[in-house]
Amino acid sequence: MSIIAEHDDATAGMHDARYRVSTARLTVFEAECFRLAAIAQRNPQRRQEIVACLCEIARDHGLLAVAGEDMIGRLFGDDAWPSIAGEPR
Picture 1: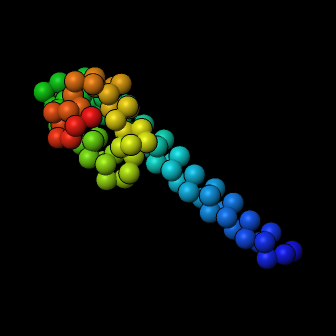
Picture 2: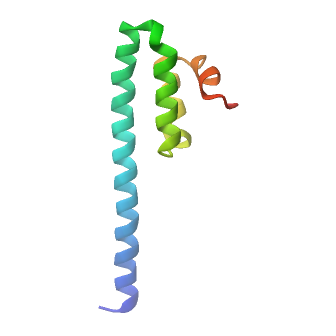
């Protein structure tokens, strides 16, 4: 096997690893969004606190730009976002 082929295998392996970890994080985040949305429906007085928590999680794990904002907006309504995130959309 040549050095170039080994490099290609390594490059492909690293790319796959990044993709798999990213996908796993998104899957877990999505599941937690749905779980907390159900809790927020039972406890509407804690809705803003739950949205803030999800925003924090998405931001801390680099998911905000990828899917966090959309997922939170779909589950809790876009109106919840600006007041919680403290950042312009």
